[in-house]
Length: 404
Ligand SMILES: [Zn+2]
Image 1 (tube, rainbow, N blue to C red):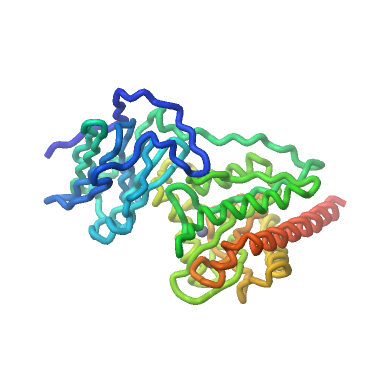
Image 2: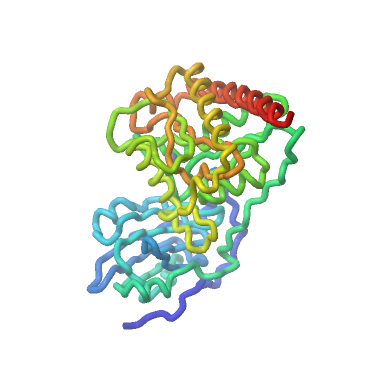
């Protein structure tokens, strides 16, 4: 069996334009062509082919826990890829997603329930275009683990997002808004509405509403359709000197006809099964996007309560209570038990009061109609603004009392 001892970045003689991506639009360096992404079974694994309009730098590697194949391109528009179709066609594939991972960097992640290693990988020119061929063959888990890991390469290095730290104290209240999902991770999708787009739109609207206040500063973990790992979202909040962190979502529930907004705080034990599943699904999104958690010392998987300082927790609770009240006052649309808890990794900042707002459920027709209505979103944003301001005032007063 032929095996590639090492498989690193394969550069083609393609001059690289500086990739610039805005609002999730690909600059169109390359797009899928011909048969696009095809996956066929072989005697001992799978054969994956990707046809594209032109050759671009690329790389391929595997990751463990769970076994994943990651293919990165600089940069490829994945429009037309049928991830769900491939999952349905091949029992070994448990998830397949494609999308923007970073500006200038497109990714395919295939999650497998067997250790299929890379046996052979190449890119061939085909006229104007190019065709990538990756042969995967069943290998033993030890060998798979030895071969796994992202190759070092300048081309694909993650550039850290820099935010200037705002001095605390007398300065403005720094609100970190975290629109959930993005890029390769679209979040929930119902009726043509993508959670990632919806919550980004809402976060921008809320930011505008908040910036009309004196002495409030707003920072966002993402302001375009890109993927941001959960841990990075927390780091960004800390780097910005955020006084509070609000993650914004609009998920779908598998069953049940729940509707209305809910607000989550961090807890090891979730309020109910649905909440637990919701948090697990979100915490898993990093894995499905091909993030190598084994490389991070303080992994998202190892999160939780031990890190949360005892004084932050009641402050998060009060913020969550205020948000429920604010949203209810302005929209009347909150879930019957709106204050919930679950182990969301993105809420793990030990020293920043953090909450996760589910504006509504995309799985509910009633909620969907509200969520896509700009007038409803405006009222929800005003409710959240009122909540943030009243919480900040009470929180500052409590801090003053403590100091005396
Ligand atoms: Zn979500």
